[in-house]
Image (cartoon, rainbow, N blue to C red):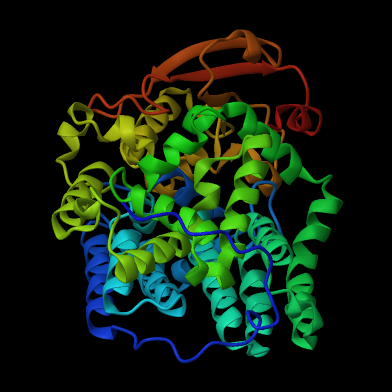
Length: 511
């Protein structure tokens, strides 16, 4: 067993000086790992279908703005660029995510290098990132988490690099990358605040005397201002959105906050980042970078208090893996833990990750596998064409005079996004939804026709707004998969009690 090392408090003037050149980058094996991950993600990119968030981004891309109630503008802007060039190609929509995951592998290895890690440490870190279940899952889909994790990992790497080099330009780069990150998810601001607090607690503190710090801060503020102004103009819906997320209690709520981090990082390889955290707080060799450990603990405390999700910390996992890998390379693994950083451990984790996160099963057998229970997002990529077909069947069943005036209203943005994609070929009119950002895309016109409503289980809520409410269909994905849409009724509602100008604000909801 490795004996504990004394904790060195603070950071002396000597500690604040730059260190020598780090080891060489193991480019060939690192790029091989990154390329393999990217290739695997691309191979499986179109195996099932669109995720509900991707359907939402596709529509939000036609309603570009400086913000939305549930996200900043950058991912819808990216979706706009992809669809403008390649059309509705699911593969091309997911290429940036695969590239982001592969880039994360490289940045993770570079972080290990900045901490003093040579080839073994770099490969242990790159491998841990490449087989991380959460990293692979978000690399498969176009999502805000995909780019938030990459950019946050880059911010942590740049901070570590600045500690070694004291190159002021890195402070400007941190501000620029953080500026991009806050236009993907506002969580990046919390990460940056935690790293700054960690530096103030553990040092080195001389970043406060660097002019480029203020230049970087100015870039960050300029990048964030348009989105913040949008939020202010619309009553800060992002704050309400955060409350709704906390109330949902995903990932086991506060009780599951730490355990789910172990699952999301791979149960066996989670040992490496836990070891890295401990060594960051204990090892004299990592004293310069103790701010990473404090930053992680501060974020943990913040998200436990606010009922945040465990993956909100994913931007720091690479740095913790790197710290653990560097210590393993220098000292060897603690007695009894060598197996956890062995090739078989990484290989087994990779197999389990692929089996639980990627669409490797025949779609008609997916419901019989453990994947839907482990990775709910997989279920949300199945059944959308049949969903649209059932709504179209109900629409066709209406008398011709009603059909021409019918309105389609869905319970959530994914359902509306699916009808937007598949509906035109089925003769459906434009769908509407009062869910999240879709509410801002416009309300229906007062046609006087019936409203086809998809989603609500009971009729009581609908009868508050329509005098006649009838079940006309039911959603079936055809493969027995218990996802959010399976079994939902399709209603035909007539006799609207209020015009849409009055009803639309009452239907608005966030989740």
